[in-house]
Image (cartoon, rainbow, N blue to C red; front, side, top):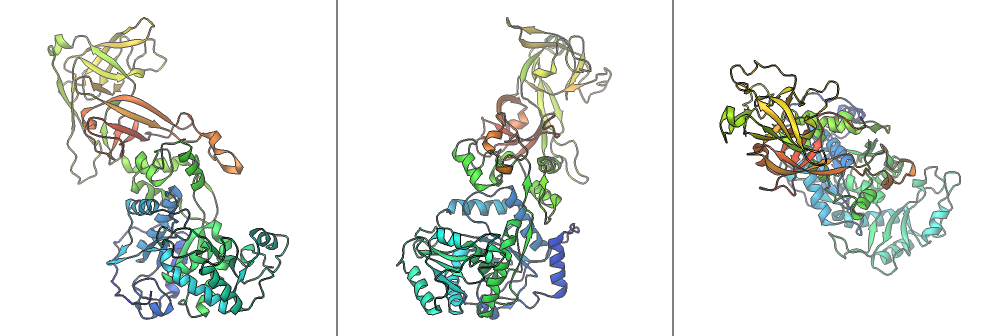
Length: 605
């Protein structure tokens, strides 16, 4: 952290349409106009004041960061934060750092590190800027954090407290009662330094003592009543191993990490608002001591994402996984990024969602249908069409052999994309065949049709989409009265796209798949995981509002073009919705599709 490295120029930002303003953008605009950080220098890597002083003028106009703790899988709320931090850095010709806040050794794992990196890149962002990697981990700063702690002790700003956890809690007071000074608060800096080094050297048991900042035990902000900044914790760290037996508290580590990385704007959610005074106090003390550069980073808070029918507590999501309420972290019903991706959500749809809901300082609930609408919008012009029959019953064209010839299969085509952007080459049309037997949806036949019903019933004509007009003659039933086959006759010379095909007028066209070339596929019909719009609000037991019908698995028949799908490829099953070839289970000869979103919002209707 003391060696200067070359600074590479950042790539020029591509011109983009003006983004809608919000209070974070207004803060950045004001700082840029005032030149708040214009004199900053960058040593080419994170470091202390001397390190950056030896560097060059920072090529990044701003520096933001996305600092997840690698103790779980990221969820939709993190996706919003990723889009905010990386998006603002992009828009202002700045840099966003990806930093792993790995100061809690007992809960962190490289599995989560790899998942987080993958999620950030999948969303369309990266940490390599101008040939410089801005991927960091807090544990790399442990040496500096320890050094900073000794500096605070020497200056009389920190002390070692040997009270029990319970005594510290009681003596901190509450909102109506000021705190009581610890009996160890008046120790000399020399005594505190000796005690702290004993903590570092493993001479005391876990929990025997903590290092606390010395601020104000009567402060109305309880977070300033001498917060703990180091604790003894014998645990093997996934990155530093057993090097340390003391670890910094998050509220102490986080502002230091920001400062070492020369972050200008530290954006976080509202629950950290009460911690901002300590954030500022700590950086002021370490800047006064000459350890960090001025001006220090500033913290700004925005409202976290509250999405209806979703929970985003890592603990509660883990409970769903470990209690086998879902199949895993990537279950398509989960709000994790890996789950949303497997469900069929696209990176663009999540970016659009983050931009559309905006950034505010007040909490509000976003309806889940807003997220679904962003996916429909993205897939409408991208997802190839295809026909699939989800609840099949066989339709027999009884005069086919007489009219078309025994065993004849008539080739048919339909466009893969009905609406192609101007100047774009349309994809090759889908090809399939029609013969004497086809599969149709069971709901497309009614022996006694309800009022307004326009599909198949005795005597009515419909068009098989992309094929012929047919006239229904009835159905056959089994001994229990269940429909086993629907019967119809084909009307000659009515094939779609041929001369005279519109000579017979019909009021409906139905989807179908040929028996000869249709392919069986497993289709997973996913719905919202919870029945309650706010499943864990007000102390409710979220398990009680689980939707028992959030997954239904059917064996469907799909047209040949869908049988060739690649994992993660998205389609619109005509009339049914948007589906994705499952990225885990889908394979050649064993197609598996997940419902991503219906064609329209029908929840609760």
